[in-house]
Image: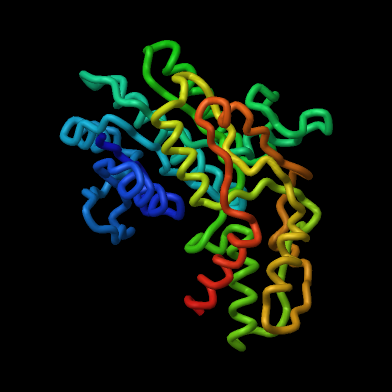
Length: 312
């Protein structure tokens, strides 16, 4: 099986490459931007800007993958507030370029479109845990663009009989994630404090929000299973099925620290709108593939903290 991973230089990309290559024994083609790097042996790597449709078409015609995973995205909620135009360009226009290019091919690869649990937005108490048919009320720019991508994917599936499976991935975490994201941010700050590089104060945003966190290594297993068994035109939640307060995440990280730490709220880390709770119902994914998460949250946090200790 030949799989193309678009936007493979990011956090999830390296884990997905390793899973598909080592565990499923697939041939991997990966794309990145010119300034990025992918240092994994025995794969084929191309530079690709998904905003250039001709380049996407040229790559697909020359490589003819049987599976395509569309990972390329502006994936930070915070960045989406600061740069909505960039987020729209990459997450909507870029996705349309990929889908429209596939539509023009003389064969039909399967596409896995990666969306986000953020698409659901402000959830009512009666809607938790969140099922895939829950009304979407996106509460930030990133979420809105991913909801749009999902709807466009469904339209292309129905209108052009394309083979598209969509994912709404909830918060996934693990070693090598950028500190734009909360667990990596906290662990990096703790590692810096332990190394004496900053004062013993950790700066935080909203600690009351509850989120559904899953180890990235479990997430990419779900992606591999959906590539093989997902139903075309359907959307699947990928998450742990259990929401935990950011405060509890912070407490777990601080407990694993080797030093005493003070916590201060940083207004710059607060979002204009923050959804109180996001928790996935993953019964549809489990029924389709048998997937369940295997790596405990405490183990993931320990791995992330150890990663940042080696980096600082």
